[in-house]
Length: 152
Image (cartoon, rainbow, N blue to C red; front, side, top):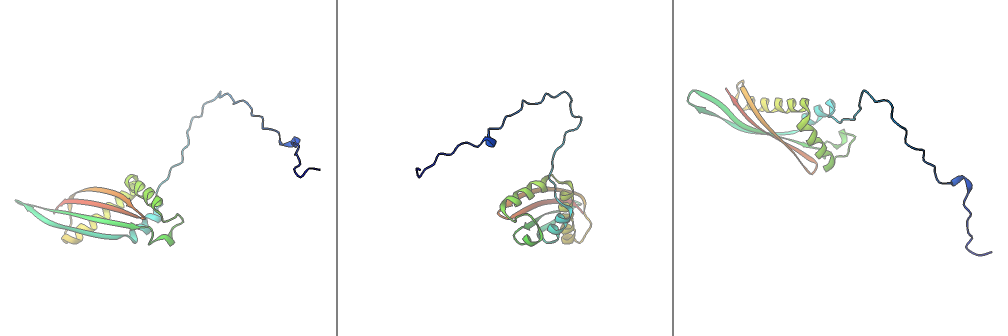
């Protein structure tokens, strides 16, 4: 017998026969989608362990006193990696940054941190607060910049 033996095809491994596509006669009323959102527990943990830096000052224009300042919140995923299931990598940081810009609860928490920081700096209750929020990912960190303008 030859060193190389020819194999015969086995009968049970025949090519799959594809059935024709089914014709749709009924239409679904509901469409389903999978959405990703921030977990509230994760948001609590991230905000609780974030690095927060603020600066600003009170300005006067005639009788009107206002506060102009900024707050920077840094979420360092590498530093909190033991708390989360997901990898603490640049991809997760980008996903987090994208969700922080669209998630209403997250934006409200970010605004609350910036308001608290501004009121702490002025030692006064602020009114007519206006904020501009920018979010970006850099490596495993998510950087949130908040410009704050308010009247005293």
